[in-house]
Image 1: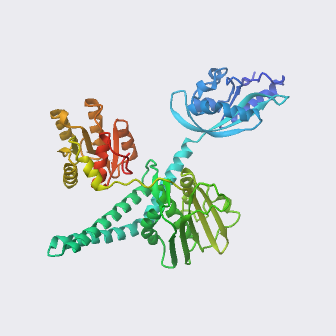
Image 2: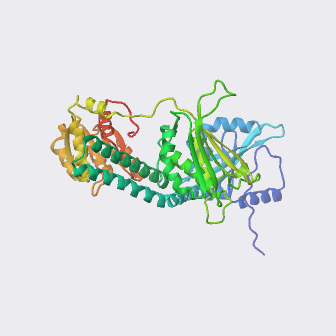
Image 3: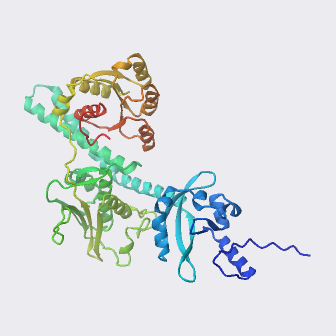
Length: 524
């Protein structure tokens, strides 16, 4: 007698009419063969169907899942928050799709893409929901890697120009300082030399921030940014990207063209548009950039906006390709020549800033991208050195400065002392702990570098939190990994000051930590 495999259990929905066992078994087998989690629930959210892949994905067996609330088996706050809106849509006979963070039975988290569809009875009434879930966590991780690769691709293109610019800037700084040190010059000449050195140093700092913004994974830090100033500062770098056979024209109309955006993201937006235009003109051409207030001829009451247009005279974009250009990973370049993320990044940056991007293109004539961003009313945050110093003189608060770089530590100590603070200094986290133990009452603010040998700024903040939980901590950082910064943020009160900073900025940061003074752009 031959062995016969027992039929799979059949889960018949309460509203279904009886069917043959053979047909029901076949349909159950077909659904179990699907490599996605297929889950059905009644209107109370109780599971009435749970296929084999759902067992693999979430860790609950079919027998354990049936009859239990779906929110207990795949918990996520997003679904609870959106449940009413989703059910209203399903009740209208419409489907719903979206991403949810969920958990397996063992508590491990992952991301799923879910498509929910309504189950209607013969009268068209909603009687249940069937959802198909796909694990997209690996896809999202791959997208993040490719976005990082796209950033590094941009950095590679910029490397030669950056090195050239840095060498020029260092030559200006060293040359002007040498003239001052030689002596025998008039005071106005010395002033011009020092001013030239300072301007070159500021430009070098901007280049460093741009490189870090392009190359590292970092949290967004939107702030009020004057795009006319930002584009002017970025122009020399852009010219390094453009070959000699391409003429570039940058036009800025109007002043105070301010928007709320992350400065690094704005730089990357412009860079990607320029690189895209350059690649469209391999035989040469003309690149025009125009920054201006947007006309509101048809919208008299519309909020003010800022427009940036990047236009080229290149090959243009075919009509059938145009609808896809902002899609991630879509590219018409040869394999290995691009990630297909340049324009997708542009679209994402503009959307996050509350704006829109439009494109017009004609084959053989060129392409024009127009970025429209809402204009900010408030001016960029600024700090005057004289006012910050004067206000600092009214306090005798004690500041412990922890910095392993001797020259930088000496500069910070001098600035804070001149501002009227009592200053103690330490060259390491260990020395700082000794000072905090020896003179606890004389220290009102801890100002520490983030990256140091031995006990770093985060470790020091953790130790200080245990010793003096209410002691304000200011962390100075130039290029630390976001994970390190986020770990430090868990210690409150806590602030960040980004290097390089000026004397007024560090004085203002200390004043803010003490509870006086206004916000400045370099601290948060």
